[in-house]
Structure formats: C-alpha cells, structure tokens
Length: 324
Image (tube, rainbow, N blue to C red; front, top):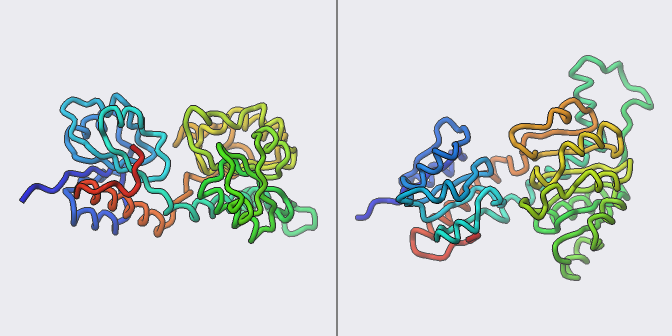
C-alpha cells in the first residue's frame, strides 16, 4: 500500500476540515498559526506533495524553485490567488487550485455591513458610547445618510459583486451601476437592474457608494488613486472588500482628512496586517480585520473545497477548480 500524500496547511483551518483531511492524507498543521516566512515555505516545497496556502503566504519564484522540489499541487485556501505567481507555477508544472463560489454571499454581506456602518456612522457612534462621551439622544446628533434611492457603483461585476448588487437593491432600495473588464450579458443586467458604465472615472464621479470587487495584481494596483478620489462626490463613500493594493491608502487618508469624501469602509489593506497609521485616527472610516469570509460555515466550506481538489488531484482526476 502506497504512503498517503503529505500535505501542509500553512495556517489553522476549522476543526471539521482538519479532521477530514487527516482521514485522507498525511497532514502537517502550522500549530502556532503564524504566517510562515519565505525560507519555511521554500523548505516545505521539498518536503510535501501539496501545500495549502492562504492570502498571508507569498508563493513566488524563490519559493517554488526550491531544490529537489516535491510539491505538485498548491491548493489555495481562498478565491483570490494574486499571492501566488501563477506563471511560475505553470512554468514549473505545479498545479494550482482555489475556492470559488463558497464565499460569495458571506463577502457580499460584509460589503453591505460596511456600507451601513459608514453611512450610519455606526463605528463612530460605538466609539463615542464606549468612550463615555455620549450625553444622550438629541435631534441632530450624529446624523448619517440613507442608502435608499442612492446609486451603488461596483468596480468588478463577478459573483461577489452581483450578490452585493442583489442585496443592495432588494434590501436597501439602491440603484445599481457597474464597471468591469467586460460587460455582463443582457440577462444578468436585467436580473440586477444594473447599468454598465464603461469608464471607471465616470463611475466614481456619479455614484454615491463605490464598492470594490476587482482582483488584485498589477492591472488594479492603486486603481483608486488620488485623482479618482478627487472625482468622487463629497457625500460618497468607498468600500473595499477586494484587495488592499487596489486603493492608494495614503491618498485615501488625505481625502478622508480633508472630507473630500464622506467616509470609507475597509476590510483589506495594502500591507496587511499593517494598517496605514493615518487611517487609525480617523472617525469617518470603518476598519475591519479582513473578515470577508469569516463565518464558521464559509471557512469550513472553503476548506472542504480545497479537500475536494486535493482528493481529485491525487486520484488522478481533473481539479474541480483549476487556476494553473
């Protein structure tokens, strides 16, 4: 009987998934649950048949070019994979999978949460109360703005953006506009009552809420620049549940400080886990610690999706979710 494939999980997963994987593979856990460095990841490439990284792990040429490389599959825990150099993986013949679909609604829920928290000044209000500064109800205290009838501008229109659009339209009575690499079908636009705007500049200038749902990478680095922040309405808010580097954080700090936009809600950051210090002192921004997919159900579903790809790969079947 052949030995079971050796699998490395670079972070701790839910107990249900770890138990499932242990029944099928020889699994090594990162017991300390701290990010692994490049040297550790490089060493792992020669010790395991598959590694299962997360967004905290940079899998680049240096890591993948380890001598006597054993890894044949990178089973990514997450739908985004800009932390993995896909071209190098293809060059070296390393397969890569991800976990689409299972975190769609959970991440969309968080985008809606951030919209409401920013426009209703919920974070600011809680800090005032916890800080002992609340003096009681009064008619003009901490007034925010309603989202009903406002236009939500989505940059990117994939699964998560469409789920966000549906929730915003049906629950909050918002209008929907979007920009993407390509226009959606007429059927999809009709389903979401969405209007395509072919220019990001026009989208940010005309919408009341800008919500980011585009992938990371060179093409979207600082897509939300100082110039585009200047184009936004003074009453508009920016929401980012996509990737931190899509936003120029220094420019965002300046825009928020000057009140050139009303506020922002962020779940991701340029240099995670570091956050621009200017953001930390501002009341008109809500900051969350990358909670987009953070429900017990979703994180378990993500792990099980990785497991399905692992099981298919080592059984000689096609990957369910191939990236490379």
